[in-house]
Length: 341
Image (tube, rainbow, N blue to C red):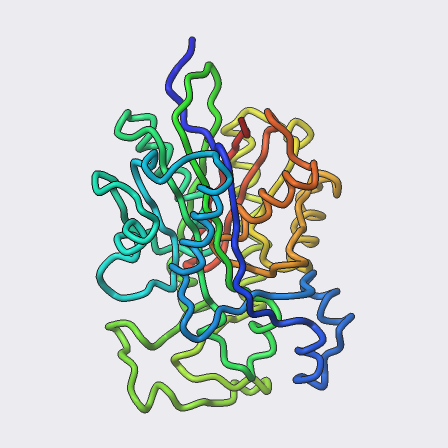
């Protein structure tokens, strides 16, 4: 029986013009070399937004690329969801500003979603709900972050990983007999909130002269409370414990086994972590996405950017069953099964 279903129609991504290469990092950090950085991260170059360039600018550029592709027009969009942890302002909602800049109709709904590495999966779940309850026909879901603005130049750990970037995903209503987005699994453990955090800048700890003071963390990394803090070992431990469990839960919910999935796209954190997870979960190399060499860890945009690139490379085809899994900052995680139309 045919039903109204939500489906991913198209993805377009955008990176800023600014770049940070392994060669540049090796010149700055004498204990690192180009090969060592690549082997550890799987990243050759990262996008770096300009001083006056925000996540919304990157997101608007991605949205414009989507419209220029001819897959849809601005007037076709009924709802805009913007996922970011680097908004333009505390208020208004950045999505409202983007609605105007993208030329979307004023009857278009718009709101921000504040999530990081799991944000893409959460966002497609929200879009699915809007579409399959007959509230809207077409959702423009934009993910964009500019984490590099939070990173202290002396933080050689975070700086080798994170990149700025955006992706625009068109999610539409179709009539079909099969589910094209879902099932889902979700999870949260706020006890890990301070393992990946920018402590100062919100209302809990406003910016002040004291929060700007840089301190040595004892490992040769200097940062202030206004910079991104990441406890790499703890993030790794969380991911290594959580991801296999979430994968198993999602497969059970789908009634599937690993060999029945055509392709796996996890949050593109870094090559070292992803290889560990692939081996732990016994996913075949040819079915597992590690594809961040040219853009780095773009946080909320990492999964859709990986999907777009995998499609271009012929690794994903129409009708393939693709398992998505986002995990990280929060701690927050989410997984979903999707099929492309």
